[in-house]
Length: 426
Image: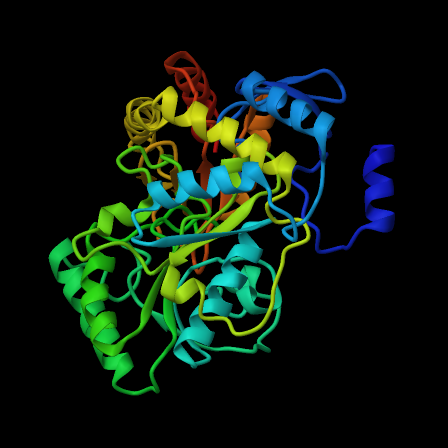
């Protein structure tokens, strides 16, 4: 065990997870690569959990951070903050939500926590609908609406949560149905559920479930849900912490795959917008955002430095069409990995869209999850110079692949080759 690992274990919580049998210390990065303290170089296919969205040490972002830090680092929201206003204007316009207001936080957890506060205050209800296999953060309120027991350490909650079918397409009681039949069955389940309960405040849903293993419903499911929700006055919160900013390739926001009945009432974001800086936020219709009847500020949300970084990063994403790159390069990578998976008995499914790809592993000849196989592939890819993630909810074990959106075709081929060798070695 390294000295730093020993020190880590001595002063940090036992439940603070570390990847790898021999955890690594990352010291610096550039583009799609990072280096550890021993000088080993890795192709990064996980981006600090989808957070280094654009590239490591992106010059435009590091310059914006340095210039802003040289002027003023902190002021709080008690004072006018030009970078915060400018970023809010851009996000409001991009959100698709009419008459949008934006509130900045420091993380996706805090963004979802704020969305729950807004929804419950607006609707005067403490009931929340959430999706099975979901993940929404690690605060007291967000773990209580997380439909994934591995990431929900307590059953105590300030909210009453009811879980809805539909987040996982290829497992569960409706997996055998066609897409249209699957959607109809999930809508019927939602209708039935609402017939048994008091009026909920909101449905919160990830368009593509992140920690749950990059699972998603058929396109249009949440639009069909929206018809039911609107009849009951229930708000729709789209958790875009992992799906926002063009990562899925086909759309800028994940909710746009379900847009037939309009945008969500509330949208939450975080991770990639800051390209590694601590930024999160909530977008909501003014009527919903302004419903709170008590004062509030944010000490660190909307920090001049993180806002400057996010403005530079968002500008780069849009100017260089990184959504298009995610669609093109991600499509090539997905097809390459599907071809690999077809020849490996341990691979149950390769799924995803854009640069958000999951490889679900099982014990060959069964539908049973194989966490040991996932751990083995994680170690093998690390040894070969590739960093990936893992996840999965009930009965699943999934490799998570989410490189920075500037990934090149050559780098995609290199990473796919490493994954192929690791998977064939199972």
